[in-house]
Amino acid sequence: MDLVFVHGHPFDPTMWQPQVEHFKKSNRVIAPTLRGYGQNRTSPDTFADFAHDLAKETEKAIMIGLSMGGQVVMEFHRLYPERVRAMVLVATTAKAEENKAMRRAMAARLRKEGMAPYTRENIDRMVLPQNEEAHAYIEKMMLATGPEGAAKAQEARAERPDYREMLRNTDVPTLIIVGSDDTYTPVPEAANLQQSMRNAGIHVIEKAAHLPNLEQPKEFNAALEDFIAETTAGEPRR
Image (cartoon, rainbow, N blue to C red; front, side, top):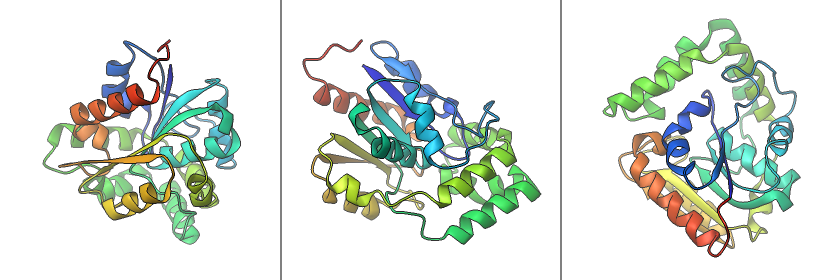
């Protein structure tokens, strides 16, 4: 079974390290670097570019995405529905961008100021400060992100469509995961999305903010493992 892990902004695939190490034992794990992030210096022109890139990685997969990565998974489902075996949407929203001006202003700031001011302002909402190990890990990753690629991604993200109607009408098995202390995607918003879908469950991870996979990796992995087992019962893993 192909598992595709899609990272969020402003991260890179190493944010999925606890999951890659755990799930590669029994699955084909793919954790690509999105355009504009990590060592991928190709910038996206549209949000669909991310999905088209993923289509080169797999024929059919369980798609797992966090925050912006979750929106990329939804875009992939919009463009390549036949290739989605199941979805795991982590700390994300299906709404179209409600404040395009904010996204564009963020892009302009990233180009002008670099990643350091953005990181200082947002790091404590990404990961709870008391989780010092995860906090330091994510801070280093954010600071290493290239400002221009991250800016272009934010401009593309501003134009993404609203995925809510698509999700209401899909039968694709879906698991929604959210941290109990996530202020970017609060639990009630995640619950509303889950309740609007035909075939979706929800798992709330306590003592976690926007990156529950790093803050509480054992619980995250267990929830994902259970979902994969239920979704693929009777199917070969490889």
